[in-house]
Amino acid sequence: INNVLGPLSTLVLLANLVFWLPLRENSLGIGERISYAVTLFLTIIALALFTSGLRPAVAESIWLDRYQTRCILLTVAPIIETVLLFYVTNVINDCMIYIKMHNECNKGDRVRVRSNTLEDWQSGE
Image 1: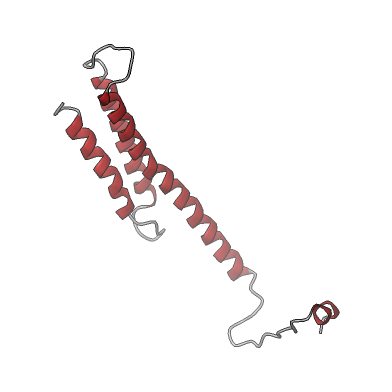
Image 2: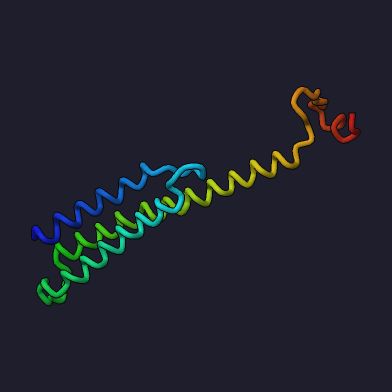
């Protein structure tokens, strides 16, 4: 039990440290964050495979099987979260670049505000 529970618990705790790595492009952490999480996930899979021969061959799942499944799920969650954050961060950065390139107003320019009525807006006043 000490050869399975201790390492799995430690790996799950280490997998949650992925949230401390930054997402900014200028600093380290962009690729390191996902590679760190995937490495921990693969380590848990390898540990489950190595210990599968030590478990009794029974038809139903035992508590150790359920524990390993929970550990795998708790390690996959940071990977999914990191991929989603990278996607959202890249979309926001692309939107900011697009806005900067296509911004027609310069700083200090006056902006004409239209009236609140629909008729004035349709007539262009």
